[in-house]
Amino acid sequence: MKTAHIRNFCIIAHIDHGKSTLADRLLEETNTISKKEMKAQVLDSMDLERERGITIKSHPIRMEYEHHDGVTYVLNLIDTPGHVDFSYEVSRSLAACEGALLLVDAAQGVEAQTVSNTYLAIDNDLKLIPIINKVDLQSAMVDDVKIQMMELIGCDESEIIEASSKSGIGIQDIFNAIIDRIDPPRDNSEERSRALIFDSMYDNYKGAIPYVRVFDGVLKKGMTAQFFAHDCEYEITETGHFILDKIKTSELRSGEVGYVVASIRDMSHIEPGDTITVKENKADEQLPGYKKIKPMVFSGLYPADADDYDQLRQALEKLKLNDASLEFTPETSQALGFGFRCGFLGLLHMEIIQERLEREFDLDLVTTTPNVVYQVLLRSGERVQVDTPAKMPPTGDIEAILEPIVSAEILTPKKYIGSIMTLCQKKRGIYKNTQYLSPEKAQLHYDLPLGEIIFDFYDKLKSISSGYASFDYELKEFQKAQLQKLDILIHSEPVDALSTICHADHAYHRGVALCSKLKELIPRQMFEVAIQAALNNRIIARTTIRAIKKNVTAKCYGGDITRKRKLWEKQKKGKKRMKMIGKVEVPQEALLAVLQVDSD
Image (cartoon, rainbow, N blue to C red; front, side, top):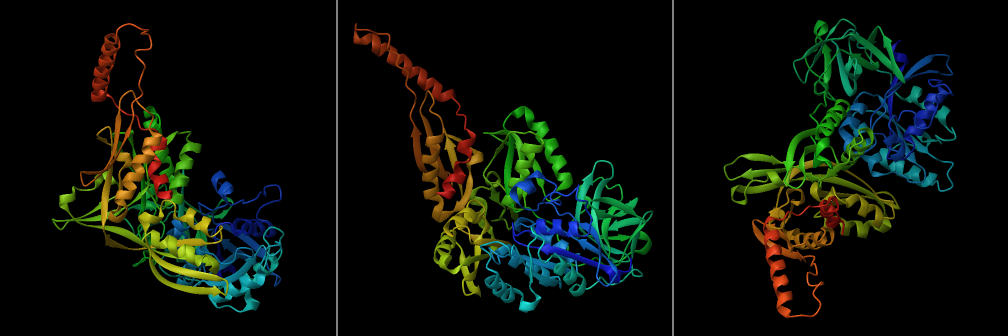
């Protein structure tokens, strides 16, 4: 296949703007899928993706399209995940393309994820094709959305395609635009071999399989693959293209998209953004843009039944084979027993992993409060990473605590600006600027602490804006902050699962709120239970759960009062002994109290 007849493109859109439905129509029009095999969201293979209407795992696919000039073109659609948590994977998918379809919902308009992915596409020098989707809806605001898109990418009105993925309107115009407007890849087949890894998957029989876009040279069976991120070498045993299933080919040439099988057993050896070269025609430098993915949100996962610990470990190992960004290490908690400390890219990533563990592996899990990673400067000059409050060094050793700050972008109708600004100020946000994409739609920029927005920020934003505001962020830097570790003691025992790291200004109020919340959630015992909040080993709040009192004198009818006194004295001694040796079980609802306090 001549590179002049290849087009590599992706679709960028906000969640639920019709990306998967448009992909379905393209596959149908090119007869890549027969009518019999066709189903809605055919590229979304997981039930979770279908239910939530989001793409979690990217699915590349190759289509053949006969243009009106009589030439058959190869169209490689490189699907991209559609959520802020996966923005690095999106950037690598974009780097593998020459063009992008910029899809915007006619009823919703330009949203935050659209804007950030558009900027990523512009950074990668992609040719953008603006498309307004769902134009056949009664609530479609086509003219308003056109103004927003022209403001966003500076295109002419004539370049914008009006379409409806569901009913097939404008699909032919989209094919013509892909072929006429997107540049074909350059033919660098004679250069030293270089291919960009933009995704991967694990096969039980073939090992880890990288998905690649070949930029220079050729990859074929028998060659020895080398990676720039590490020194391991593997012999290539198969190359091929994606046409729903994997189809073998003799080689992958410059400009093509496909997969490489090389019996790679360790999933960590394949990293998105890394470059593959071959020993026989080795390149000197890797393709730009690679960086290691670092988890930003941490949470403890524990089996509800201690006997399921091994099953949970095996389940996490299996999930990691298909998701290299998941990290986990064993840990123990006094309240919850044996479990794992897991690192996630963000809150959505955490929800997905949790749900997959419960559904696919039939596990009943207890989850601790999610928290972000902090950097702690010690008086000795050393800098340590802290991903759980339990690992926080003693107060006397700490010089300063640095928290992650994100650069946030909020798109909203202008009438909600005031309430959104109030919300950002409550979350310790620093205002940057406001821009207007149209007379009715504004774009707010804030610097926000990641620790403040991982709990309930998104939910509150949606409720105060009646669901119209959208939100996107990227990590900016670590900054010093007045942070302290808040411990919760139940019956004088610290419960590590309830410890949090919070800002000094909020610590007292959070401690009081937590104590009163736990008082409602922890069942009453036969003895009195004290719930205390401690800051730097100093008790700042306390509530008491009163004991259940059994009526030991119920059987005494009349007679001398000393009989009753004797029984009460005996009960008192028993309660005293019970208080010394008694243990308090903390239910899962109580462990989630931290989240509820933050959402109040």
